[in-house]
Amino acid sequence: MRLRLLAVAFVGFTLAACSGAATPSPAVTAAASSQATVAASPKAAAVALYLCATRPVAWDGSSAIDLTGTWAGDDGGVYSLRQLGDQVWWLGMSGIGGPLVDRGHDFTNVYHGTLSGETVTGTYADVPGGMIQDNGPVVMKLTKTSDGGISLDRVDPVLDTGAALKMLQPCTPG
Image: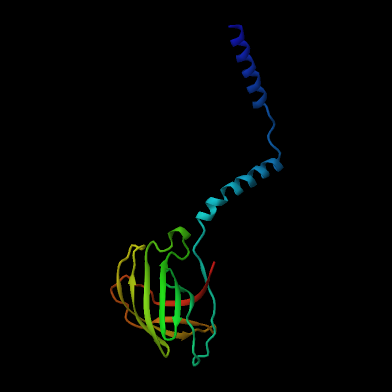
């Protein structure tokens, strides 16, 4: 019994000593906050945003052009284009401006078209990965913009399909 009382008294004194500690200095608080931020950084990477800043691409209107690159759509998608000769393909994924982990959630589509002069005529199809599962024709016209760059503007009537895309502009992912 005496040993038990001694143990209880020891624990009581230890807790009393700990609870009377002074408030940490601002330097200690800042260091702890910095460590918490570093510890949370893997989580911060999970909420990275899916962005693509538009960039001008010069074109004189008459020379050959290579459309290969990353393009931002006015439908909230990012499109990766590849041109080989007069053949144009793309992979389009929704989610621009949203969390990177949500990329392609609303739509993911592929496209194949033929470039003739300033016009790309082809067909898209949504693929598994996005919620929309549609397909149809898309005709895009290469247009010079007021800032000296280019855009691809949709010239076919936007049909009653899942493709709301009306314009693409070259962009830099980041």
